[in-house]
Amino acid sequence: MTEKADMPGLWKRLVRYFVAGAFTVLPLAITIVAISWAIGFLADLVGPDTFLGQQFSNVGLQFATNPAVAYGIGWLTLLAVVVVVGFLVESGMRGFVSRVLNTAIRHVPLVGKVYDTSQQLVDMLDAGGDDKMKGMSVVYCSFDGHDGVGVLALLPKKETVTIDGSQFYVVLVPQSPVPIGGGLLFMPVESVRHVDMAVDTLMSIYVSMGAVAPASIPTGRASGQS
Image: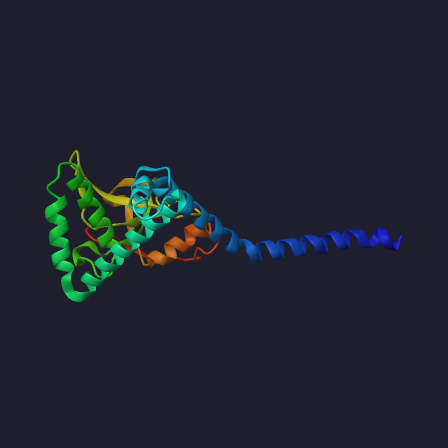
């Protein structure tokens, strides 16, 4: 009888231990999932069977016959080139390197437009980039009035775009739990409110699927909003 009476208590302890262990390893699990997703994404772009991967292998085949070794040598060559470019930039040649790239790429049809867009994105993330590209901020976007459903999003720039005479902000809504990418929305100016929050905090909210969201978020009007 005593053993039967102890069984419910034993199960409760096991469940409590499991829940405690799950919440302990959950941050590590989320980190592993995020890194695995990033590795898979990169493999689809520059893996050995992709176009870029084959170019790396072609470089390596000048020094080795084994395909795997050749692919690795190609990557090492790319890394060496990046280090050399970084040395030139840190030596005060950032302007010269930028002018060379601009002259070589920006005048190529289609390629130049893609390069301009990519350069703007990198400048927003680069602390040493162009000041006019900085200022990414967190905003709250309302879909049904100020008291309706909404999302926290990133406002890449404070300038608005005009569509059929109406003003819109271009905002990026990260995806959860891996906030890389997401949805690009054109929100009416009156539906966007500035949030006094760091971008890192916003990313933490999406990574944790809302678990670390603060109970109260100070808000204000987004710059340029009437």
